[in-house]
Length: 319
Image 1 (cartoon, one colour):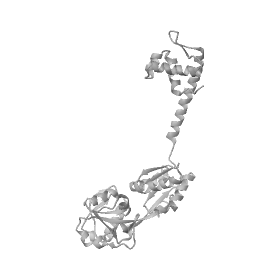
Image 2 (cartoon, one colour):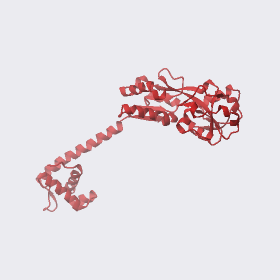
Image 3 (cartoon, rainbow, N blue to C red):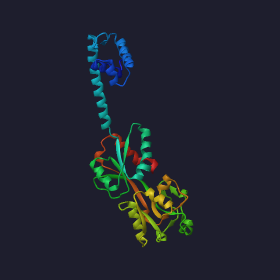
Image 4 (cartoon, rainbow, N blue to C red):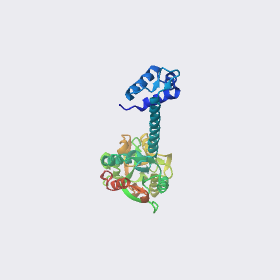
């Protein structure tokens, strides 16, 4: 005997409930000849008639009663199996839930996760965009397993380590006349190594840009705080003409000539060096910072999570 398909079982049960091929066919959006063909195929496979077609109304044969009883059990098992599989899909959680600012979720984390998956093909990670303040609370609540931040002073109940260092540079529209005086200080692609600027690259003082229009990120962002401090240490208050949510937006607006902007040195490496911008290394210690991995050690419950953290600590791609 060949296996009876679930679709065939459903058709036979429909005929058994309606005691009519016509009504069962209409109910299942199938033609009556096609339904009759399915039933005859199953009856031939089983070696016995399920329905007595010579009676009016249609009757179920004694053998058919037993078959339908078995089919109902199989249909119930199928239904329970579908519900169980659906519950598993709903309950399934990624191996690791990582929170980070938008830039990290877009450019930094995907290649790291992909590289780890080369060694662990069934590893899965969920990325959630968040800011530093939210990151702390989500880690404490167990919503996140791990996060990336540039914040240096994390609470004592969270553990962290440096993933990589990065530089902050100033982006100025190439059409700005100030670039003519700073031609010897403009950086080129060879001065960049990932998110860092070479230590032997020339520096300029931010004071040269005191009269320029500035594009800043909104309050609460680390680069905003550093940019303000750099300007204040040079003795001037920057003329902020726009406050933005995303650093990449500031980069593109500077490219369009709307002002100068403090940006992370990795942005042109990821988004592309623009011929419409001049980039400058600034003579200030606050242009160097660390990207840190932060986590709550108590919530790293399985070996897969711990392995990913160990991988980040030793990964040569971010060193």
